Image 1 (cartoon, one colour):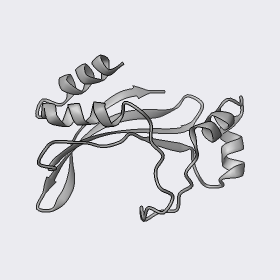
Image 2: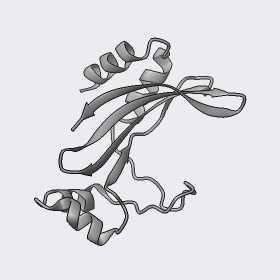
Image 3: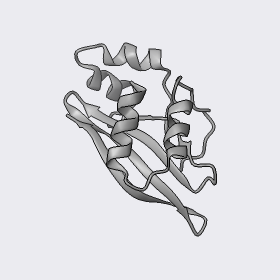
Amino acid sequence: DAKDIRDNIMSGFKNISRETINSFLERNAKSSQLPPDMDLGVEYTLLTPEELSKITSQPNWHEILNEKYPGSGGYTIFSRVGFNNTLDQAVVYVGQVQGPLMGMGFYNLLEKQDGEWKLMDQIMVWIS
């Protein structure tokens, strides 16, 4: 629910601009698939929501995931990034799941300083 997300972000990040929150909510109103050719500095495999759902609907999904993608250690979900108008503040959601009842999700507030993005604050949304 967009109102709950807005309230959660605003209460957790005292210095976040409304522009950044509004951008985040607008950009995440619908899901988007990442391009498969991004250079993240690590090996990765992108799964469609359908592929992930098919795996995680199984009772032993973490074993299936590790068999199919050895060394993966689980999966990570990213939101789209919301920016302020000057593109020097950003918020992004990151969820990491290693196995059943083993995961966490965070909103991350970043600021661009001297040309580099720095993590300024983090809100834990859930943990299992």
